[in-house]
Length: 46
Image (cartoon, rainbow, N blue to C red; front, side, top):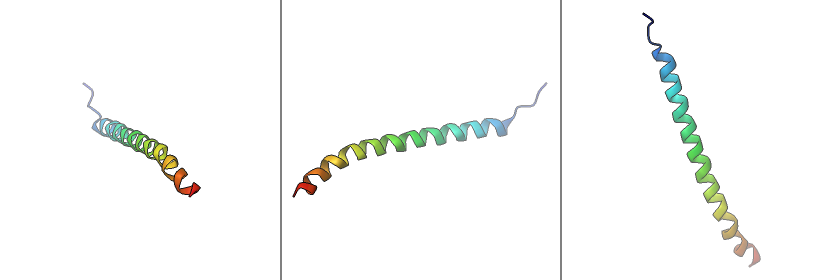
């Protein structure tokens, strides 16, 4: 019987977690950057 490869499973889990965190960060950045230009536009006109 084959031995389970726990290192591989752990690495895959870490990569999935890292990917999810990065996607969250990018989503948060998009939302904040979407608001930033509208906030800066009135200040620039003054």
